[in-house]
Amino acid sequence: MSAPLLEVRDLKMHFPVKSGFFSRTKARNFAVDGVNLSINPGETLGLVGESGCGKSTLGRCISRLYQPTAGEILFKDANLAGMSHRQLLPYRQNIQMIFQDPMESLNARHTVGEILEEPFLIHGIGNAQTRRQSVSKLLDTVGLPGRSASRYPFEFSGGQRQRIGIARAIALKPELIICDEPVSALDVSIQSQILNLLMELQKEFNLAYLFIAHDLAVVKHISDRVAIMYLGKIVEQASSNEIYHRPFHPYTQSLISAIPIPDPHHSATRILLKGDVPSPISPPPGCAFHTRCPKASESCQRDVPILKTVAPEHIAACHFAEAP
Ligand code: SF4
Image (tube, rainbow, N blue to C red):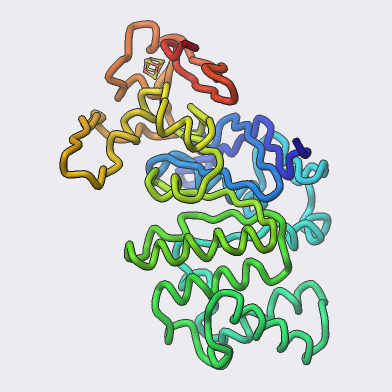
């Protein structure tokens, strides 16, 4: 197997929570708290969890929109975690992001042509003529007509805007794209078009994706492997097929039980969790999931479960997840 393209080691993002007249740090938000993961070239790792579990923060740390508190982000063996903005510039070409709401990430006052030309200008690539050609090729690649270049983002539908966001992300031929809930705001029929486009581009350009979503059904469609995140930590990780058919962690089991089954003769029992995700400012002691876990015992309130191998290439953090 080839060396990982990306390796994240013990990554932490602890935001200070400030209050009072002097804006003193009163507490810490443990948004990402010791995450390890890797992504191979051309692979898709799905990252799933409820809102507020830290998955988008993790994506933003990896793309270095945030400066992580601790840990390593090894991209082709260079550690991006401690790099300055200047040192990061050559790597920014190689790691791009696609956001949930393209309207927020696309400059509304610029035409699509200007938006797509911008990455080339920032990195000093080509001249006016070659940049125009690149923009027209990008529009064609994502299935938009060439005349889109002279129009503004507000003139497009949500799905078309996401295509513009994808075109911008692939402009500099990156090797890794962080897809942060790229289809969550779209209609179901448009979702599958965007997912298919992402999969076609992956094949064509050997792209690796970190695909962030709260919906396991969406992630299943596109991922080779899936990592489940809860309150700043990865609690289970395995191949896509394995995790859907043999989830070990009670949290993963509850997420999978919520996926609708398109078969009227098959009824699945939904595992409903109590309450909401606790605050990452004061995570529960022991297993952070114990306040909602249907299988929690007394020891779960005290002892922190560590990620252990429960099957080949399958890890889970639960005291009672045992290898068969
Ligand atoms: Fe549930 Fe305990 Fe396992 Fe945590 S360690 S997931 S609380 S059974």
